[in-house]
Length: 217
Image 1: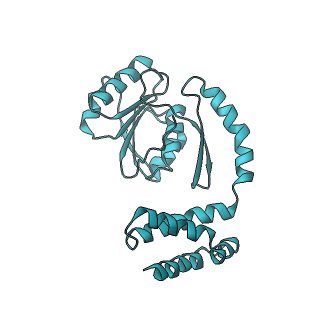
Image 2: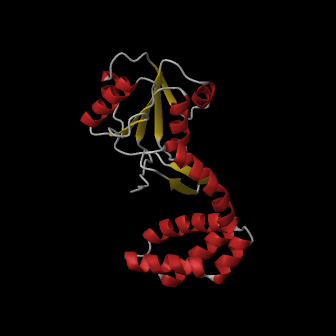
Image 3: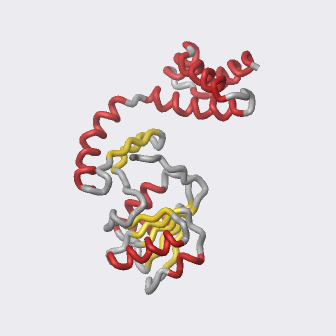
């Protein structure tokens, strides 16, 4: 089962500053979460993220896993090249009731990372083998990526952004979920909105949403 977990505002600790750690950091950067990377060495791309203050960094040579108790992470990702250390990190994270993942040990991980197609940081499509074959997941993702990037158009991205705006506005003005759902479908199917989206005029489309809300309240 693939679950899209909401990490917004939560702390995720990534242990390991190599290529595997970089992959996980890249995946997390789109999730609006706090990222702390712990390692005694890092690669150039991670160093760049630290300088740009996209992630926090704690330089540390790992002798044990007690360092995790200093933080209150929501999730811990073990990406070192030491399998035994990764397992110890996962065990400690679970004791702290955190979601835990080891890059080289799917059996002890709470979840598997799918190979993700990311379209304009708005649509994510995951291909997962449940940890059975990350290599095949990547291969299938590369095959599917070309199709999805043709399938999902600019208008779809604008409509998603408009729906997010409309949903937030409707929460404070429409009391019940069924009525809000009806309103959101009304926005999606409104001919005026469709034309504004086609023209790439998101601000005017947002004004149209406010007008439609006013007609309902």
